[in-house]
Length: 360
Length: 172
Image (cartoon, rainbow over all chains, first blue to last red; front, side):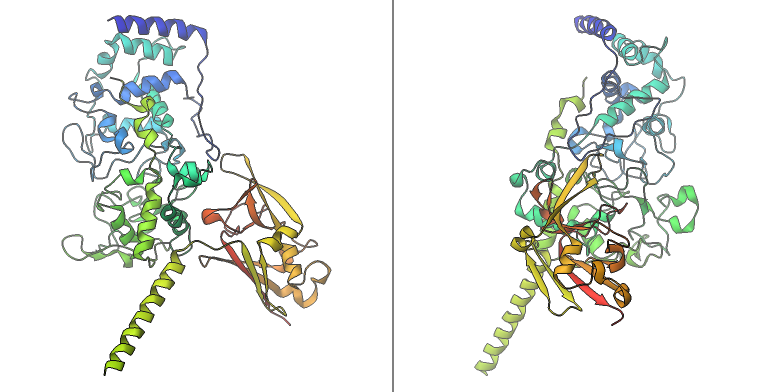
């Protein structure tokens, strides 16, 4: 009670004294993220968004929140092959990391039309195929928030010009602002590459970096730039030869073909950012590869061969496979070096940063 | 028989050591700054760090991803070609116009440039063989030498880990 009163005083006094601002603490080499014109960043929206992100009241049964599938300690993934919703329903694909999501031109594994976080948040909140948070219009979700005096104040401060700011639209705007604020730029690799700290990474990692950016491996062609991902403005989707069921991928994970219906798009998925990749196992859109070592085996072979069972097939020969996935030879030393390099992308500060932690 | 076994063991060991050396070479970092110019020229030329330091230095700027400018310092590619006897400037005419160079990287990456696009009277590309970025020696996968092509919109011709330039004449 006392805390609520203090918060109220702080919000009312603070809100009246200054305009909303937001300062991106970005190191050299990191561009300013693109932000929608109708949802500029502010400290107030980020703070509100953080509370909503971690609030289990945003689920049908009070058991889940956004953070259930996006855990800070796992670089905002969940460690599971595929995400599991509040009611126990499995999502067909794994939860993607939210780290540096502000730089993503498209947001999900395989929907080329999903470009804004505000729009995307509606899917886990209200989606039914599958049920994630399981919210439905009229199920008391907004009244639950309205009954909490803290939320009334936080919404008022985050959206000060609106007479009734407690709306679904503003919930998604605030969550989107919090998600955009999750920037990883303090990994050992950043300290080495941008900060000039030669000792921040090992000699093995430096050798691995050269392999990563080399012509034979060409990892950087799909995982490029400061974020080790596809482009900030245009995103390419890739069929990496993970499956080959007569040229197809197992339903329902057929890649962007689901939306484009172009047979050439069968099995094409987004190349995720590799920052903190050592923490985000299992890998690939369906979590079907357990370790980084096995991921390298998949790419070195130019596709995965599944010898038996319902997914049996030679991914290397998938007719829709990206020509970049041609395979390569990698010594045991090179493999170890490459994994050491990938581990340097782990940003320990991010994992413990209180700005991104559960406020409840 | 004993000799034969010894010979076989030695041969196996030699092959194995050769394999290890090849693997090490494949995975190792490039050596100190050094560029070889070879191909259809009277004599191959190797320029080491000291040679590059004594040649006229040029600085070019290219945009970084955050919109700031990155400054690369090195030697103009034209000057390096001229030093190796490759026709540039006034000598770039006639049959020489069908010549090109291949810029080759440590990892096998190759990019082709025609002499015409490099010539000051023609394409006038201000390409630099850089050994410094923002005043510091190029390191890691970028260096120790790289091409910087400031007029290019994409970076694919700015060859990293540059090791050699091969000159090819199509008409002699």
